[in-house]
Image 1 (cartoon, helix red, strand yellow):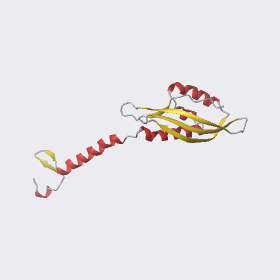
Image 2 (image 1 turned 90 degrees about the vertical axis):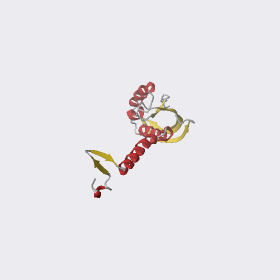
Image 3 (image 1 turned 90 degrees about the horizontal axis):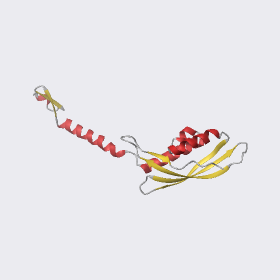
Image 4 (image 1 turned 30 degrees about the horizontal axis):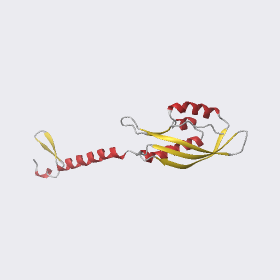
Length: 156
C-alpha cells in the first residue's frame, strides 16, 4: 500500500476494493435517509384539506371531470351526468366553512357554502353543502386518497 493513499476513502487490496471508514459512514447515512423517508408519507388528516380545497375549486370552475374524481364510484356517474347537463348552473362563490375529522383521521364531515344562480334567473341562491369524506388506503406503494362517500345533492 502506498503511504500517500492512507486518507483516500477507498483503498485497493490485491485486486479487490475495500470500503474504508469513510465509505461505511456514507453508506450508513444514505441508508438512514432512505429508510426515514418511508415515515414521511403524508398523514390522512393533513391531506384532507388539500383534497377538499381542490374539489371545491374544481366545482367553482365547473370542471365536472376534475370534481367527479373525488366522488365514490357509485355516485360519480350520476354526478357527471347532472353536472354536464346543467349548463345553466353557475357558481358565484364556493366557500369552505368547516371540517370535522374523526379521531382516527380517516373520516371527515365538511360543510361548504355554495352561492350560485341558474339561468335565466340572475338571483343568487345559497346552499350549505354537507359531505362525508372517507380516506381510502392506497395499494402497495401508492399513497391513499380522500373520497366523498355520499351522493352530490340536487341544488334547489
